[in-house]
Length: 284
Image (cartoon, rainbow, N blue to C red):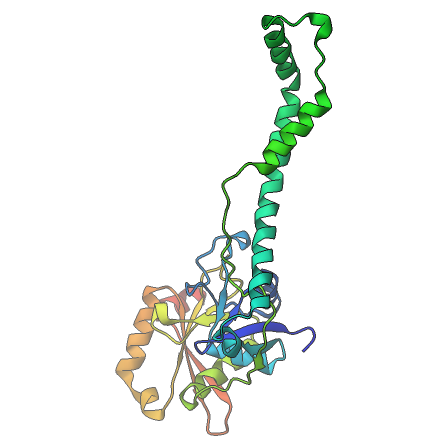
């Protein structure tokens, strides 16, 4: 499974917890998924990605067939109570995180102490003089003061951030899953795969626009969808004029080209584009 991106199978979807893996799928293979279950077009920049990323069943099946991912199921391991060794290992990880948070605080405050050290020395000397100690008898060790301050900082309590990991941080047993789509999704997947394979576009779910798919000329972060795709599942739907009119009117309202996709008797996928006559006239 070397070189393949690990995707965790949960609730009939695929979850990606590593941002580098997600970026590779998105920008190299045009598989965009959703972020925290929200439309992928919501983030305004690459730095605003939130994880986990969620792949739809169609995207999971496509990535599996293309050999891009390996689908793993950890439910059997994660539903069991952790062993004592796992508990101790997790406790060590938690302590390490707290230590890593504390070190920058210590270093910052120690630098501030060293910066103000001349004033601190002057204040101590002035205090000793007031208490009756002679000038020639005053000896203040700067290195000792810094050492004492460092010890004080190391033993003091600081505010801690408790990290809640999105992915289980310890190694776990897992089983590999060869996910198969239900029969009622096979035609939609056939269209999805055909578009992804034959056209250099980004393709996402189209629920928000009342269609099956949305097509983008580039990454949805930077482009609006240009086409809406409706998958026609049976012959009667193709002949339903009211259905066709509804779809076309909706595409005009949202300023997108309407595409109807259906399977030919030979098994291939055929596309029929419908556009408002006014737009066609303008193009001419």
